Image (cartoon, rainbow, N blue to C red; front, side, top):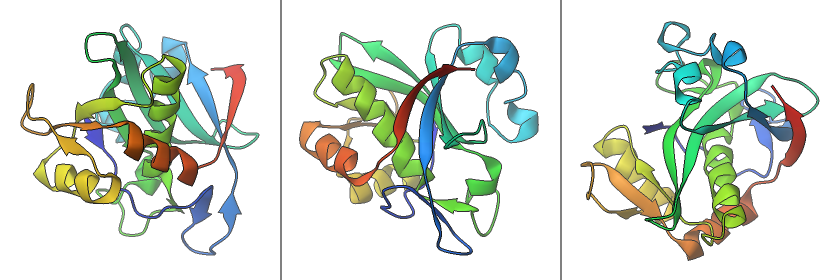
Length: 181
């Protein structure tokens, strides 16, 4: 389930209060013990440690820290020739469903870009697919990113195709790190 808003196209995260630009990194999380604190009770919607059994998990962090701003669970889908995004959500302080004013702007777009990078790496030309959490978010992704509603497996099933994927990748910057949590 994808539950993030695209609030601003900003190359790095932007502090919503000060306007300061904050550099980010992507870290792969491979330990379920680390993910055990990311669950419904802590406002992460799902038990992320369980997702690790069948998905790759990546975290968007503030550069040089393990301060997680958002998480994504994805898997390579050879049948679709795309990366399937099983879950994507922002940390509670960046989630407009939870707070009135997010701490950082740009988290949602960065998380989509991470998935697109993985789709490029797998030879899928950046194509990703997933399920929006609701109709409002599906319409939002169509408007913000040119997502194509598929409605094949789920009422809010969508795909971001190659051209739009490239545009998204060009908008967001972050570093991939070899560190794993």
